[in-house]
Length: 99
Length: 417
Image (cartoon, rainbow over all chains, first blue to last red; front, side, top):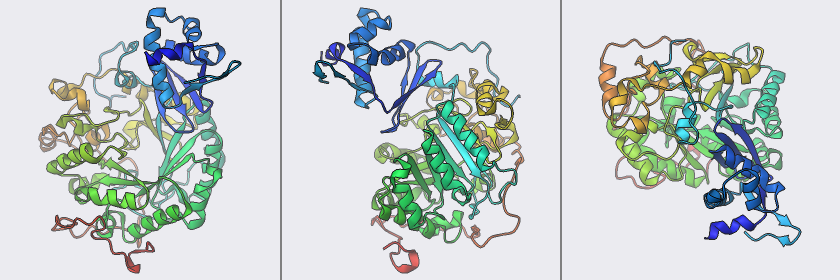
């Protein structure tokens, strides 16, 4: 599945995005395209925050305590965040990641 | 406070669930914050929701306004909708605009265009604004005849001049903001054509019986068949039209309109007025919906997070008389301000309920609440609308299909070539 390819890639929160904590998770605001997105689970917020510090998406999911069985669903959610540039591929030591 | 409808106790926030369910329980900071910078206005629109005209002498100072922006930045309120009154006639308006943009608080401001000279338009289009400023030009008729009827003589030409100046300066994607009335519902296609002409986005919002709007609501609010017309138009042609999510009461026609279909008052929305008073929503400037003042200890954050009124508005609703209606889940009972200012119970139907329950409620015993403030000028101004003659025909004949129908391109129509 295409979305699951993201699991082995290095991603990060877009530098134009701010996360505002909310009782249900967080609100993500993109200062560039002015899109507002709601992260409806605290776990997803933890994953998004961990992206930049982990070698790949799968490691960020593990670090955030997301069970392996849910990795596919999270890959879908992350792909949707990528659609509006909330998160973006990260340059790595191995060269530019491919989205 | 006893203003809010009766609600059951124990509001526990569910994990997951829909955004509407989450929003009804409130957020740590507003998403949509309106800040009326001044009650002073060069116009005297018949339906002004804030009864504007004269400046309030207690208006926040420049330093106080900067402190508000600092606090909004701390709370991560990413943008504010600035209005009034006419915000641009505050001498420090342009300074505050730059200050906000420089502090990660984007600005969408509403104006009648009075100060949007070519120089100001160039400033708005310049890098100084980081593309982080939205401009909404208020226009309540696609023709001068319809617009000036409620907004006053000359206001149409003023708005079009501003639109022209912004277009000439290369300002991208200005908004034309229209309050939908009985007189202009028939002009929706013309409004769209006008927006297209200026490279603008059309924004349509609902007329509320707030402020001076209470005095003219009976005459201006769309008739039931016009509500249907508006709903059908929005579904057919409204994909790129902004609505401020203000027509959620129309969702009870069937298919829900895009956007948030709930009353956001005190939950995701609020209003800061020129003296720092915080109200539940922009359409509820009345003592009954006053949550506190941001100059008090704790500032805006304390009012938003801890005020008694907002806490109550965020507790679960029972739905009242509307709960048994099959459309309750789509319209959520409609607009709180519209009910309040027409003297209807807050847990009953919206006065413009499209299932007809509003008309029943309006014909029953009710007392329209007295306004708690009025900033109207005591003497008429030369720009005051004169709503003496009701139009006896639709503003534009049904066969006039030209997008510029009714628009006179000659020099008498303003400076738009």
